[in-house]
Image (cartoon, rainbow, N blue to C red; front, side):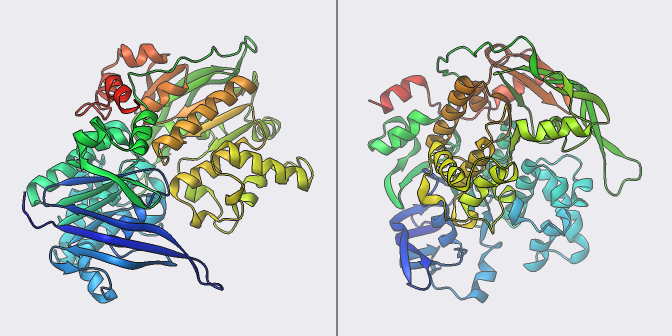
Length: 548
């Protein structure tokens, strides 16, 4: 390893201005120091709000309004980045530092075609002629695993799934093979098979170009698989760092041990009480539903998003849908909630169709959706209290005082608390925003929760709290869940039965343990084989050692 690091961070201090009128500033990062060498992957891990993303944004000079580096040094090779003028930053970002942001929903321009956005970074830095940029953009999209990249290049971001949008961002960041790649939760929206391809791609870049990778993640299994060294952050400080096997295999700090104990494992299951037998009839039935969408730019060409899918969930039960991005999981959720009308088939709630106006009215009150992207689903103008209170106001539930008390109760249940009530989404981390979205969904105490990747933005400790909360609520109140996720370890903890979607079709359905322990379909075998953590397994024995 070269003795001179690509990235050298020393005693970094970052503060945020909270109230301009009083110039109150709070520390977000305090005295952080670490190195990243060429060809090395260093993972920053920790809970939401620990300072991981703030550290990454300080390195690349993209702190949000109110954020400021007030101390320390950040050097790229031998050049100091702290205090770099804006004009000089334009030569660094993209060419020397590539950034994969956490949230593809707000990082991509919604009114510009995907291919043009990939080509833009090539043109800005003068690497290719304009005539060649479009062709090379298609090849970049192909390299990050997008099917039919020629068609994807002509689409807009809203026409792609969350995982597809994240792959576009990864392609943009890697386009010029920069010396340093900062990947801020780059796989949180990806299914396990695409996640593996994307992480393999990052490995290829570091090997081929000698790039350094600063990898921000809450997924300890991914860190165990992919990182050479791990840096553990808590409350803006580094509590432990070192080689991955050392930190995750023999952690010395109590906080690291608590993170390991909370990490979901596909092979570790927690005994759960049986689902209450509330009634023999299913609450939700999906009968042979199908849905096709027209592809833009292709006259008469369609893609079959959902193809003859049927499933049934008993009252108080939990059914998991797993599969790759674009497999049809989210489309099934939209069909269940009547946000999209099926081309054929029927959805029944308590035996009654939900397609007519009366059925939709009942459905709106008795079912709630937790979106995959919490930033896009929360009104940035509203406070957290107003967001959580919104369904209560809309359905005229309780007095103002009762609603206020209910909001505080819900915030406590999702591990936030009343102190967050007056904040706005832009002041929260990704994990905190998702907790607000879950609190809002629980406000009306619905019968059915459709959970579309509800924990993809959460760190492992908060994820464990949310999953325990969802499990407890289901058993105490008889809630019914349709749980959609690409994280098979999370699905195993939550659901009783699971269905595997591939190209819009259910290829395997059965009890959760049977499907994961003894998969029958080749596609299911591939999904299970792609679960992270296999390279440096967080085994039950390791977890037992880490919690002693």
